[in-house]
Length: 535
Image (tube, one colour):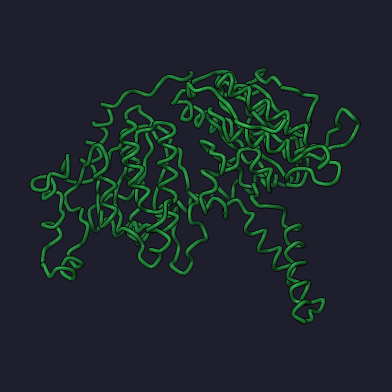
């Protein structure tokens, strides 16, 4: 029997992730050993509670990028949410096995995303610092802008003012501007043999002619006894992590939001998602069958089930947590006027329905979960005359002004304005995750290749350049290949558009966990409103 295509894709994804987790490989690990230090993932294992799970975020960051500088697994920094002394914490750990922990542009973007999630979920943050600083050849893309390196330190200050606990442990290098991160935290630990300074010995000599060794300049003993910068001076990584855990125990315990051992299951086994998706990525399916593998049995109450059928809106529960869900229907439907509507396409009535539903979820203050498998909004004369733009704008406005937590799951396609209207990255989802088959783009590869090819062909004709059929075929094939590469969800995850690529059968468990994090902060007491909205 031929193995299911989505199972195969998932197995390949998991194998690739195991490779990424190896970080800088044997050479990088050996370097840490020579310095008497643990690797980032060894530090994580020691820090986290035994048998606790770690929800890693941004694992695919920088995948396939910076090829001229060699491989850069996970952007050289590990970020994720784990349990320390029974407290959920955001952990940000430099991986010194990768380029000595140097910060590339995607490293910065990844840290900023982790800080944002921590701030919105009010998660304590633990920084495990071991970085050689900014990767100088790419400094122009790291240093000056509002979403570059300096934003990390601004966030440190803002989070501290908001009462979000931050603890930093320097267990290696902490050089130049990067030194602000630990010093702006509430508590600062440092191991012997580590270094914290704005300029290293070589730069000090070059700048002012002073000769000084690294320990006297910025060692743990100096900062503990003379500068007073360090709160706790520890002998090595293991004692430092032990101290970190003891300090975390002084923090408030996690709020009890729901029963984590909730016994009600979904009405269909989680593994059935592979069968629901069918024999190919192009096959339609009834999204209700898929949702039956994710939400609690008998909990789903569909809202306006007979209207705007290409979008399914429903109240439901995931492991006892009430949610409102908006999902694309991927099979053909027939509207109340007898017209056939294409699955995965948003029509005016569906957008109107979803906008009202989003508003109601804000009214009763329950989180929203969006399940995207969307190819876009309907186009054409009839669609425009139905007010499709007005209806889409209404939905975008409702989502943009939502005050409840929003989570987005990309199940398949995520194209064009459909991505926006169903809470894409630009609309502040607390978490955005995807399946390995997901595709992220303005439009499909065929349409994009045809459009770009037409433009290039006309440009060549205007310049008097004659293209033969072979050249035109090759140009079209090259454009399609390039677009397909950019549609690959790993391409988007590398650039920070996705927090996590998950195995489809884990969707229910992952969403339950993320919902618990997202709901740590009660919905704002201010009332929901949208401003001027099209009617």
